[in-house]
Amino acid sequence: MDDSHSVIGKGEYSPDSSAVLPEYGEQEEHRRPWSTRVVESFKRDPNAHATPKSAVGADGRVFDLEGAAAATANSPLQRSLKGRHLQMIAIGGSIGTGLFVGSGSALANGGPASVVIAFILIGIMLYCTVHALGEMAVLFPVAGSFSAYSTRFLDPAWGFAMGWNYAMQWLVVLPLEIVAATLTIEYWTKGSINNDAWVAIFLFIIILINLFGVKGYGEAEFVFAIVKVVAIVGFILLGIILDCGGGPGGGYLGGAYWRDPGAFNNGFKGLCSVFVTAAFAFSGTELVGLAAAETANPRKSLPTAIKQVFWRITLFYIVALTLVGLLVRYDDPRLINGTSSADAKSSPFVIAITNASISGLPSVFNVVIMIAVLSVGNSSIYGSSRTLAALAEQHQAPKILGYIDRKGRPIVAIGVASTVGFLAFFAGS
Image (cartoon, rainbow, N blue to C red):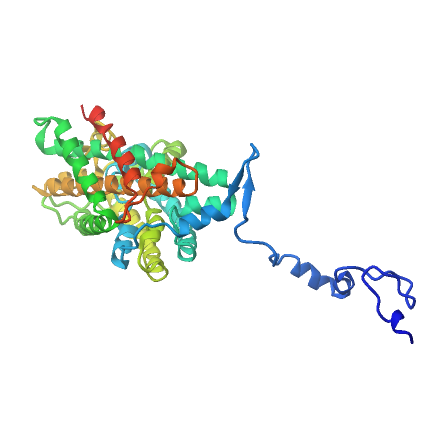
């Protein structure tokens, strides 16, 4: 047979066949079983990239996704945090006014059963979210964390909105927490000292801590978290003793307050109102993902820290708030008589201890509340400054915000966050 007839190109006619040979291997594809083709159709396209090179916005501008991903991955932030820092940030990162004080208004609005139900449901959602964040942070320990992930894997517009929303949230929280600290001080001073003096002192302390860089933030949070954890564990032990009648006043309480005035207040509406407080109380949990970009060995330290979230939700929130509902009536007027949502006088923890007639202990717990407030204020500068710097590195914020000095501090972003803190002088007055 002539060789000219044996070589047949793609799409050419074969003299030995009545069909044209298909191009690009289509003949082989049709020979594969139908079930195999269906299953393999769901597999990832081998030619697809995890990070597209670019995205085109509605205005026609092209956003460089690869450049943004590279910038956050190669950020000059220093990896100075150790495993112990990360674990304490995960455990105590969100323990603040939401738990110690905000739970009082939740108890008054919804009753003890509503508080437990709402915190359990929000806790379950949070547990799943934090584990998902941990998976991403272990694989991609980049600056900006979840806002950078949104830019990289969803859409630059989504990442832009999430990043700025998160940064603005922390910028607003800073003056709020400073004012809360001054209100806590009023528990002892009774207004004899001008609040502006305390605002200046607390603002100076928080700014000074952050000027020491991520190592200063980590060490401060390590100490703050230990104080908060010891206080809550101590309250749980004390609460069990008081509920069983072991307090100075004696008298077994048990579940009496769940019968009179009752387990629920304001019905379903009261339950729904508690969800807002519960969501606010858990804020700050995501800081462990944000800190992954400045951790020495995130692939080793982060999984251990993420697993601590379960114990924080179960022990520090659910158990502690259950005991609060057993020790404080939801119709106690002190729960709603505070001057603000951050007033320590309306804390159900302080009220429970006061009801037990234990002298000196309410003041001790107020110190814990003040430390928790300062801890959240410290985290607010850290969270907002790192997010603003990451946005600038991705060209989603003014370039000057991305300036990072030789010590790994986003010094301009820290300055912006600190400046917003001066708004506390207006509220403090």
